[in-house]
Length: 106
Image (cartoon, rainbow, N blue to C red; front, side):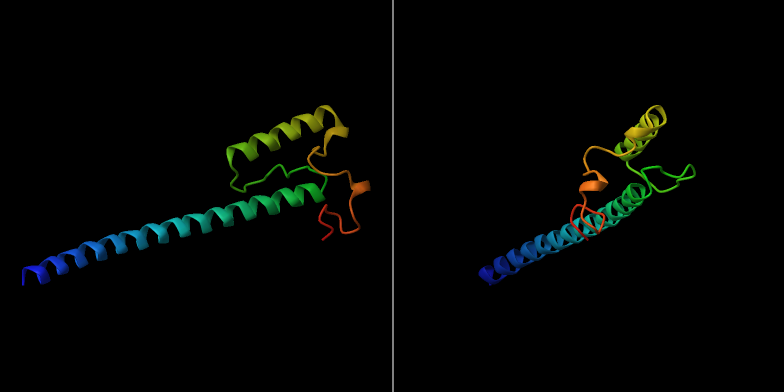
């Protein structure tokens, strides 16, 4: 009986650990999915900016990270001071892009 009670206690401990692990992984998965959705929105916005000449609309209400907001503000200041600086150097110039308009050719 003592061995059976010890085994039941061990099973309860393992079950509790299992449930905690499952909940932790579910929470991590949901957080990752939310982040992917947020980043997909930012990528779509930045792609629209790239296609439209890097000029964000003045009434832009999309939630942005602080880094993106700072980069957009800096790009706007730079483009206002130097109209030739509207395209960030991280992308290939349009003349070297494939017919699809992106570096990947899609």
